[in-house]
Each structure stands twice: as C-alpha cells, then as structure tokens.
Amino acid sequence: MKTNNCAWKYFSYLLIPVYFFLSPAATLHAQIQLVLEEQVIFYTQEWEGNRDHYGRPFVDEDILERMKFVGLEEAWGTIRAAGYHNKFEGDWYIMHPQKVMTGRALTAAFLPASPGLAQRMNDAGTQQGLQGGANQWPIYMLQKGDIYVADGFGKIKEGTLIGNNLGQAIYTNSGNGPVFFGSARDLGGLREIEGFNAWVKGWHPSYIHEMMLISINGPVRIGEAIALPGDVVLAVEGGVLFIPPHLAERVIVSSEVERLTDAFRIERIQEGVYTLEETYGTRWTDAIDTDFYEWLETNGSRLQQDLGVGFKTIGRIIETNSRNWREWVEE
Image (cartoon, rainbow, N blue to C red; front, side, top):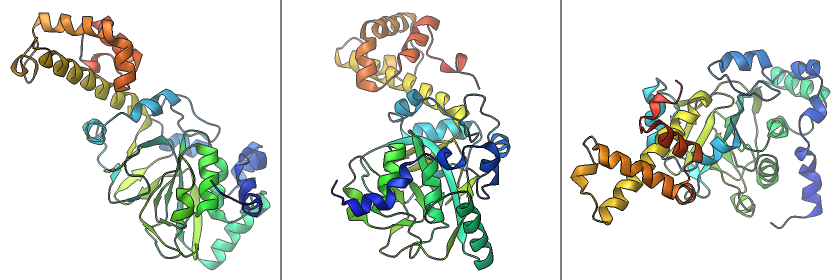
C-alpha cells in the first residue's frame, strides 16, 4: 500500500491498544460510551466460555477459521432451528464479494447528533485520554480476530464512518474489515489495503457529520438483524449472519459432518461403488456406514486440507461410529 509519513502520523496512534489509555478498571467504567463488563455478560449470558477484559465472549481462533468454510444457508438454518430468527442482514456493498470474512463482533452504535449531549460525550472521552473523533474510539479496542460492527442508522451522505486511514488502522488491529449499517468513503484508497474487505450500505465522498457515538460493546441493530458483542460474524457475498457464540461450534460441526457425508457419497458414486439411491435420502446400510468410517480414517489429513474440516470432528465421528453430531455437541 502506498502511503506517506503524514498519513501514518495521522492514524498511527490508533494502533495503540485501548488499555494503554484505559487500563484501570475504574477508568474503563468511567468512559461513558463503553458498556460495563457486567452488562456485556448479562447480554451474552448463554456463553460459558472465555471472555476478553471487556466481558465480550471470546471464541477460539480455530472456530473463526473453520467458520470460513460454512455455507450461509447452513449456518442460518442451524441458528434458526435454535430460535434465532433475527440475525441476518442482506443487501450490502462489498469490496471483495468473492471473499469470506469471519470474526468476533465488536459493536458500536451511533445516533444523530444532539448538540449538548454530543459535546458532553466527546468531552468525557477526551478526559479519558482518547484521541481524535469519537468514530475512532472503537478502533482502539479491536483485537486480532475482531470485526468492527457499527450501526450508523443507515446514513449514507455524511454517514461515512471510515476512510482509508481508519481502514488501515482497523485492518492492522483486527486483521479484518468492518460491517457498517452506514457508509464509508475513499473506496479507491481502501482497495489499496491488501487483505482489507468491507460490508457497507453505501459509499459517499463526504465526511462524517452530525453523528454521535452512543455505545461500544452493546446490542446494536444492523438493518433487520440484532448483533451482540462477541457474536461470530459470517460475512459472505449473500449477506451477513451474526451467530451467537454459544452456537458457533454447533454451526461448524453440523456443516462439517454434512461436507464429509457429501464428499464420501460423491467419491464413491464416481468410483461406481454405490448408486445415488443407496447413499442419498435413505438410511445407510451397516456396510456403507463401516465403509464411511474407514474412509475417514484413511483420508483424514486430505479431508482436513481440502474441505476445511476440523480433525476433532473427524475423530468424533470415528470414535462414536455416528454421524449424528447432536449426540456429541452440547445445546
């Protein structure tokens, strides 16, 4: 990427982790926009795993990587079956539609500016040592594997939450791009950031104006969807799905079992071992089941590489002699 020293000076401080400014717990709680850790835990109490120091659910990197191979429809069907009907938003402008982006949601919400309140909130952030405009503050908090998810209430003109400088800071801190229910600017400059991608509702040359940051790490509305801090974001050409973190493994394992089943069926049909009728839409015979488990043992490494299936899933199927993943994935 081409950039000059002046541009780097402009946003280099954005690459400093937020705890540099806000390390004491009391100071964290004093930042007016930042949702308290106890509230984040309340919002996301279904999650029983690790959390970051803000209280966000912190799914493993392995989950995020394996999620890249999951189809949108598969994931949507799994979480919908668990009762989550409001986690998808479509109709995006995407920088690189052919690429998949996954990560943990770091959420922020903006509102139309109200002069007195906006000034007080900006002053409070400045007193905490936060630099630059309020639209930069969530970027301080991004960690590797995060995705910056912001509700810009769909504003396009003067609703541009980032340009290429802040885009570089987002990518440097998180390794991902953003998902904005709003707009961004400087599409050409953002395209120069290798590896960067973005899902936005529009592009506009204007600067952000008459908007105020109201919360960080709270629930946000992204079009027809609700996103919570720590949700696993699956962003693809067909839209964005916000997967509750406690369902992430269920989504992945159900997809992996289906991929393995399909790969075995296709391979054996091509080899002339079985017919479609014998392997699709009917219960497999014991002989086919046994053949499948032996096939997994023989081809485990290849299947991991070619299909993106976790070795844990392959091992569990062999160990239990069952493709019924519901038996060994907790609700």
